[in-house]
Amino acid sequence: MTEKILANGKVETRVAIIGIIVEEESSVEELNQILHEYGSCIIGRMGIPYPQKGINIISIAVDAPQNVISALSGKLGKLPGISSKAAYSKI
Image (cartoon, rainbow, N blue to C red):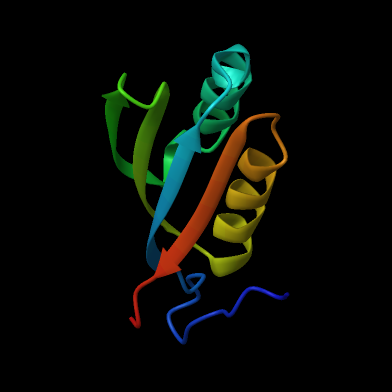
């Protein structure tokens, strides 16, 4: 997918939420490393431990080109015991 360039010369970005479910604690270090790599497009992050189910729930708000958001969500989802899904704004 190609980035769309706006009339002002800037790259078009989208706002999205990436929902992450962590089932394997051994993948947390690599998950955090990937999030650090994409830190410039992360607006905010919220983590919720859910000890009753033995999982952690993370919500990441991002503002980036759609291909960058897809790449980030895809990299996270490839980690063992990690599920991720992106939901995009319409603007």
